[in-house]
Image (cartoon, rainbow, N blue to C red; front, side, top):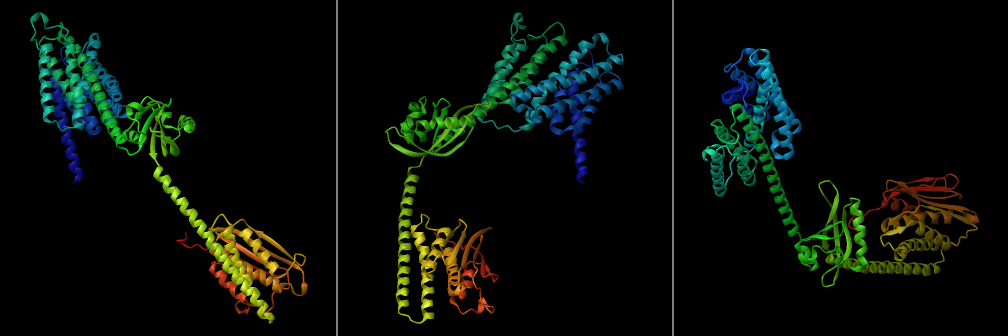
Length: 634
């Protein structure tokens, strides 16, 4: 059903177009004086081009049928009428293709360059097709003399071209914007324009002047009316004015009035059409230029309003560092009025020790660089210096050449004061944290000392060993806080230095010299948070302590090795090994009575890790773990 309805609509459009074409063709052929089929006034060309651009190529049958009916009912045979109709249709299709391809299609009236392309491609080039096919078919059929070929062809071609120049823009512009939005002042002005158009047309082409002045060359008086329409109303009204003026001029010339009235009507109409076509095109171009200028002025006014309402100072400078624009915010920020600032070198707002920065900025602009948040110091009119943040972008002309720069200047005094307060607060917190770590370290040292004093009163070797193990564990925890207290970074612990200090103190606490046991350390340059460092340090403490107490009995010599490496993907490998006597054959970690071996699985679990125990050529404990992350930690 929808397909059928669309087909019926297309057929209706084709029939309406056929009717309009026939009526316009009859009007044009009524002015054919050199040959019944060649006229200097041919509106159907403009109608054809507009129809194909607006409705598409699918309506070409309406053009073919209308051209055939117009010619078969005027003069000529079926063959010549078909040839002329085919030439008219092909002319329209080629013109529409060229305009769509090279002149912005239906919107060719929006830019001056597209109007010129339309004039050349549609008005000059495509119209040669119809003139050539039509006149040649008439000459071949004997309906036109070959000796008159050039004059008939020129009349035909010029009539078609002027139809494109005058009629097509009118139809295109009204189809794009068919609504009238004139206010009462514009309606009044339009009425004056039409009155002047009528009076001027009568003066030039109406024969109202005295007899001896009716053919004076007053055609230039048409220009003010078209300029008025172009300047005040726009391209659509300008095209309409041109068509109305063309109608008045045509009537007067046919009656022998005006500067184009010559010996023959065909010559008169050719001169008139050539004048009106050229005038209509130039008026349309002028209207588009004026419209573009108005739009550019509106954009410029909006941009100027944005610049003026900006809370940031916006300054425009040339590449020679001369101020060319200075908004209200700049006046408030620097204290200089625009009249005083514009034309001055931009260095007047810079402290003497900052002038060199402008040279660096200009050099970067020449490389087409955009400068964002460049912090510097500038100076007010009263001599006060203050910190600013600059955002600078190059300004280019139509050819892309950099001709200046736009500077957005923001006062960051409040920001700097806030940053200084934050830094002061951070320094206070850093001092506080150092004091906390220092006090915790001292308290742990007190506990260590108490345990040491208490151990001296214990005579039982097992109890004494327990006291020593506890001292080592407290010492390992105290070492974390001591390291943080001495470190520049209060949130991370360098595991390399920490591990060396911890193992060295363990060797010292157990009274083991380097002549008896060797210590091999392979610690990657990694740092851990305090939580991870405490657990990792306790693991090193327990495993190394076990090596020192049990792996080398009776003064046996050997080596203890500690490795801490990164596996990538935020995981780490801790290995503690020795080449001592090894563990008992029936040893199981889960059943061990030693507090140290009971702590190892718990500490590994805290680190979300795993461990394995190897008993070849001594004992090797290999642990894989990841760092502990606590959310909300400051």
